View 1: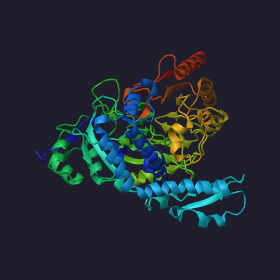
View 2: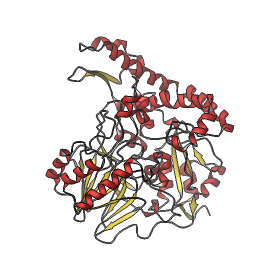
View 3: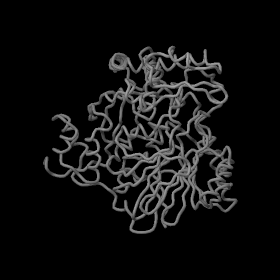
Amino acid sequence: MDEQLKYLRSRAIIEPLVDRFYAWFYTVAPVQAAMNLAFLQIPLLESYLQSPQVHIAASNNPELRGGYFVNIPEDRVEEVRELLATIKRDRAEMIRFAEAIAEGQELLRANATGFDLTPLYPQLPKELGGVVEMAYDTDNQAQIRFMEPLAYKSPAYAPARQSVQLSLETGIERPFILSTPRLTNPDVLELDIPFNHPGLEELFKARVHGATVSHLREALGLDEAQTEQLLTLLADEPELAEDRHIPDGGRIRYFGHACLVLQTPEGSVVTDPFISADNSQGDRYTLDDLPDFIDLILITHGHQDHIVLETLLQLRGRVGSIVVPRSSRGNLPDPSMALVLRQVGFNVIEVDEFDEVPFPGGKVTATPFLGEHCDLDIRGKSTYWVELAGKRVFVGADSSGIDPKLYRYIREHLGKADLAFIGMECDGAPLTWLYQALLTKPVTKKMSNSRKLSGSNAKQAGEILTELGVDEAYVYAMGEEPWLGHVMATTYNEDTYQIKQIEEFLDWAGQRGITAGHLYGQQEWRW
């Protein structure tokens, strides 16, 4: 049996972990990971240990969905206590690095008054020595700039934090990723290996090409018990969809949320892959429906629902390159996606606005992305213009229409789009929901609530289409699909503001003869 080819089952999933917390962009990039560990995750575990009943009750309250509550049963309190003690012992250098960042920021606030910053360097905490530069902007506002590649060589980056859990998708919503660590589970294969471990690539390639059990056991370094668990993830035959490739023309498939798969017979492009592994429902495309090889993956921005490691890791070995927007190089809220993804094992292409990336049968142009990041100076964000099989497609993600003239420049540069995909999460979470660990100076609730993770409302979406001259457009990236709950934690009903705005936008489009729709689940365009 060990020499027969086995195939990874459709429902096989991976949860990448750092110190048992679900890994996302800001918990892998070293500077931001240290701050999230010290100022969010550790206090969260301490709060749970003080009042586990409060956390459990809040986790089960629909009104508090997406809140920072640890959803772990009370009979496992001692495991959480042990996890906290282990983190404090093993990550002491990371914790101290985060504290040093806060101290350095306070040093600037107290002493950077527009005069020479040179005398402040000896006063910086020693943990920041050699990895930061202090600088003013032209309004004499001082800030610390991190030399981010060096941070990967410092104690702030510890691959030993990384591990993975492998299991089968049950269809039951997993606990919210930003708040609940993953403890051990007898139904889960636990592997203490980093995300760039070559064995993971061998495992996920077996979804398409198959592999022997002995090969996978050796590649992953499994013992007998782990090998038995691995067998539950494997099937005798591949479970891939027969129509995952096309013989001619072009095709776009909506896979849910912000994931689009754009194909020609020669090549394929996937945007913001966050893909269900549950092929039992019949109401969605899954990992089975992806082409065997993906030329380009396009990442629009660094939020946890757009750069999704649990899907990206499943695509290792099947991707030519991941295209990411270039960050601001050292700005605290704007880490480099390229550095993170290269550490994970991908080939990465960084782009600026209007950079072009060809692929077989088409071309991608990076286009500007406006707003949606709580007014923070985050430049690692991009929309995309994809040309394939005679069509021009605008992939808008969560870019806002707060200044519609921006989209006029896109049209002047690239022409008229045939099809546009627009995000309309127009009443998103406040500043502190996602960025609280990076804020070394407290902000008021009123201030935080005024700065939201919001895309376009109906008026702004209409103005985007007007400037682009689009005749066909679809609202997507709303986080409504049921398999997104552990990451998105969104709850809508027919009276929710966002849904009302989408209805208003669709009415506006209909009155102007624009074909428009609100995407959910799956959809296909073929020409």
